[in-house]
Length: 172
Image 1 (cartoon, rainbow, N blue to C red):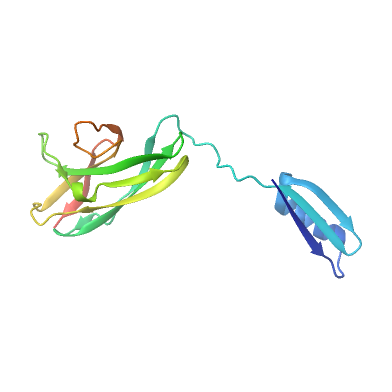
Image 2 (image 1 turned 30 degrees about the vertical axis):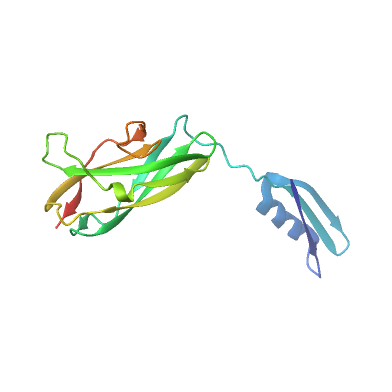
């Protein structure tokens, strides 16, 4: 698709204005026409997203809230996700566990697991996690996951998950 801009020039140097436009638009200019009192700039405009920089659906980064929270607080987590495929519905899951724990205990907040529609490419998606009143005070590890359906459902599976991020959450 092409975009065209016409600029009426009243006084001043046409060449200087044309040079500034070339510097601003760069190599996207397909036509630059200077006429008496007018300058026309045409450029290519693309609606296509740049290709993602991943080969598989991946959590590329996370943003956690303040590291100190109280029991009963809701925290908001941002997932940066790279989706190399077409639009896809997934569920964002999250678990916490006491840092000193050596077993398989995980604390989940399934009521806040949320289905999101991932667009192709890189995007940011948010969910909340409630630190229940029953959560003991202490230091916790966090793990995030992307599921193809409801986490814990026998027909669902994790598409991607982070390693346990250790010592990142303090429950007071």
